[in-house]
Amino acid sequence: MRTQSWTGLAVLALSASVAGAQICFYGGDNDFRNAMPSERNTQIDAAWTFDDFDWPGGVVRSVRGMYLAEFWPAPVAGDIAIHRGMGEGEWGERLIQIRDITELEWTLIDSFFYIYELELNLSFYLGPGTYHIGVRPVGTGGDQSAMLLTTSGRNSQGSPIGNDNAFFQSDYFGFPVPTAVSNLFGPGTWDFSIGVCGVEAFELALEGECPGVMRASVRGATPDGRVALIASAPGGCGGQTVIPPGLPCAGAILPVRGASLIRILTADGDGRASLSGSVGAPACGRVCLVALDAATCEVSNAAPL
Image (cartoon, rainbow, N blue to C red):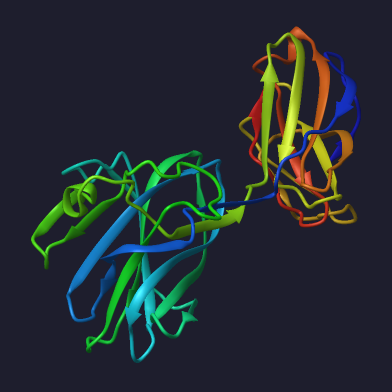
């Protein structure tokens, strides 16, 4: 990888933006108003309870739900499903369904009311958007039950909260397609105690018009760490560069050809940094930028100018 500057890309200024590297949605603490089955291989064959959440884009690391449960022995696994565009009688588009997740924690929260929290540990990327998610424990086929608890939004995080957009589905109970919970419980803001947490993906985004002043923004980097901002050679957006031996992150593959280092940036405490500069016409549509996290050697997406 060469370190150089070239005509047509003049870097003018560095600035930083602040946002959380860790991202979470939480519908809120249970309110004891009601509960709905969300379980598999228990007293019943299967049931899903779904609620909606907004996600800014990033890697999902954990999903949890709060249950009124009689579950002995403890769950052997958990399932999740994520849909986009779910509605009354409509599944929408199923984006994620993962069954039999064994990396889990089943924690007793209240021994008097038999309230448990299920937390599933996993890792997958989910792009920005509004989704419906279902989470359920998996039993051993015995005398077990798990009812996902409702919430009024206390201690909630993220959005939407209190919008009554939850759905129930279970062939066992005679609901083969998603059915609005308000049609089963009656009018009200029926939301559920579900949480989704993760980290921002290591991504590079460009703003501005080319030619002209543009801004390259990196998020999801190592907090307070160094980030290399790299440009392809003109016409090199579709190639690749392998960092040679003797350089930091040797062996890392950059998704551009003829890579040249523009600047080493320092991320802020939230893993974000940005660089603004004037871009000349020769670079427009012919040069791509990519970022490299010096601590992890993770490579971002390639973004064309």
